[in-house]
Length: 483
Image (cartoon, rainbow, N blue to C red):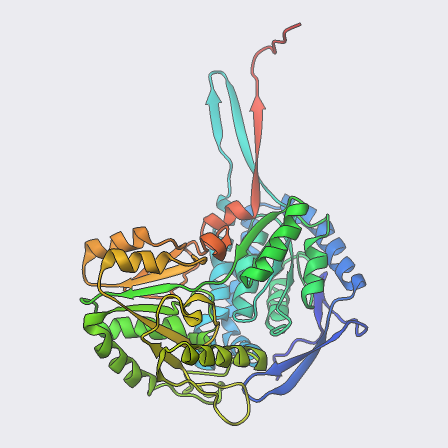
């Protein structure tokens, strides 16, 4: 692997190794082979990351937004030039097929660097006239941000958090998931090559305790986590005790509603993308598919035909369209939910088994006749397991779709314009789709309602979460006082 990083951490502009940290094996999900070992950050490594970041941030904040943006845009160009190598590394890290990583991962990361690089110069305050007095506002960086990544999109998340943080004049320390530690190191390397001053984008490896020590450090001003709801609760609580700014991108059990007038081919495409892309390991997946009773059997028949066309195999083969799960643990979790679904009386209509041989492969799986109270319809599985539920009435299905602790995403398929927008307006979810699913352009805000998170990533909305506003009151005349 010629693209592999050369050490565990990237701190102050260079690769750093400290082998006294706990070893973390990097396992290629397609074969189960150990392809690398990184070492968790020791207290000394964490200290280096924090002190170098805080020292570098002062000069970075003093640069113009134009100068900061130019570096981010240059990094985006380098990332696109190296898309092939970065996609191979992403596939080694996650097991996702190259067919997918080559168009969805480093490319999305580059989009984020380009977008925030492009708006960095436009981050201004405002002037407020008050008679002859006036107030002006300044948009200032928060200081030192910590990003904690998930294992499903290691390159993309490293950029989705890094780009707005850097555009606003902050420094960032990124801790990837211990399951997928390699890709963020290449992001740091590319940013540095593009001219980012040393210390502004540091990467440290480790499990929960490394994340906890970063989140609880008083020198950290902001925490952004992508992860599960239980992890989110812990990180949010720890950040709250230090009164730190927080963004949380958590899980979901998102609904897709397919009305009787929907284009069935498009609805099946949406259900496939919303359940089986990345082998189902996407936080916004639409895993509760409500299909109108009139078209349910036609939908299931077409879905099965299309799933027969999935090419399951070596993720490095460009023909492969469905890869392994990220880890043995995640495979076992998903298989466990399949047993629960069967036990509760859901009808298994497709898949349902692990695939023999090397690696962590399982079949794309579909349950029909699922009811709202079944575990497979309540809990986030984070694997390729789709639940199909019946409905006949719009008001009824809206209430059922919203009856969940989560609120990350939701989709509707219908040819009725008024109904499409009415349903979207009534969804209790931060990211909604009409006649499509799981599109995530960096220009649009992304984030959840309810337990699915707080704050938004991407778009201009992210700027609010990586900067703060200072008001300056200017009195033009004499000051009065009561005595």
